Image (cartoon, rainbow, N blue to C red; front, side):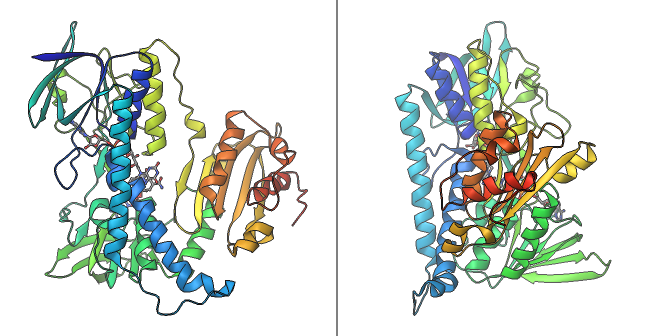
Length: 475
Ligand code: FAD
Ligand code: NAI
């Protein structure tokens, strides 16, 4: 027998489960279908983010950073640590525990909001005037009929041609988060967000990490002043970063994997690693949706084609998150999920793509919102820039964490903030002030005139805003 719902969400990642909760809050009868299985085969909602993305990566980043501090940072504070060691098994177990807490939390939230949860694989059967019929293949088979469908099926790691992930030697993010002993030599292909975060984890735990990047520019999407600072710091920490390479044959041996590549001088090179992480971007999950049966349009790259409001070509079928255009970020997926639920309710849900923050959780962290200096130049927008180094911030000195800076970019005439770029301690938290300021279309002077607590890292934000007008007080 089929079950009827106002809204059925396919996918229980941050885009999907948040859309389901918001739709339920708005009074709809809602179901959420998700196929992720935990180690015991049970439901594990939260998608990539919770299971093999944001949450477990941050758990391992934290554990490895504690180890690094204990080994290299504590002595300066007069704390002596003798016989320091680490246990990767315990780190993984803790990470798995953190993931489980999040899985359970989401199941609880769905229940609390009266969202019916279906554990299984969802696919389209038909879409006509009577609504959309979906099949759920799980422990049992269910048929759901929906007035509205929200596709939130997320993304998967992109493999290099001829080098499929075996998750033993050639690792996607899934394998990279489950390495059970420090590899002596770790290779990383792609110096993007995953490559730098996971490379940092295993470098801190003692691996010799080599990152091979195709582009000649390091972190090309990041403001280049910040990216250059990051490159300098990461190389100093011990990451071997090779830019402008062309990857050739990848050969898996019994216990190693060799990568042939051409370096930026055109020389043929070969590197042999114990493990290789391939982090060269992600592809949308649309296989298995039976999209063709209902005529759901995909774009040239396989993403579900949507308009600015996340509407697909099918009536009352929407799509959000990694499976559609735009940045592949959990908070972007969530914002789209909320906006779509509100649009279904006849409200005016809105996502401001100009104020979506980015964070790279390396040490120091890198965070930004809005335009980079190179974008402003390319777009011919006249701007003023102001920077303030953490070296001149009292709290950063007390923390013993003085690398990096805050950088403001403001319109030359109106002083409106156009971008804020941070590399430094707690950049992930500091960026929130810049997002609020940009949402309210604040000027750099607005931030410069706001009282910031002393001593705090946020004073560096205020000082960078003052620097736009060339009137820093502490530098
Ligand atoms: P997903 O989280 O991928 O969820 C989709 C869900 O749908 C999955 O559970 C999937 O199994 C399920 N599904 C797919 N097809 C079907 C189907 N047919 N039927 C039923 N279920 C289906 N972003 C950040 O903002 N901050 C970070 O720190 C961060 N760190 C990351 C670290 C790593 C290693 C990775 C890989 C990603 C990271 N991301 C981060 C990106 C973030 O994980 C994604 O942007 C986010 O998960 C996208 O959410 P989503 O809901 O669109 O899709
Ligand atoms: P990415 O897009 O961040 O980086 C991929 C890198 O690989 C790029 O620098 C690209 O030039 C390079 N590359 C592509 N093809 C290559 C090739 N053949 N040889 C060598 N280099 C190649 O993608 P990544 O790191 O896989 O992460 C995917 C997405 O997941 C990110 O874009 C981000 O949206 C999300 N994510 C977000 C995080 C966060 O918010 N902190 C953390 C991790 C992932």
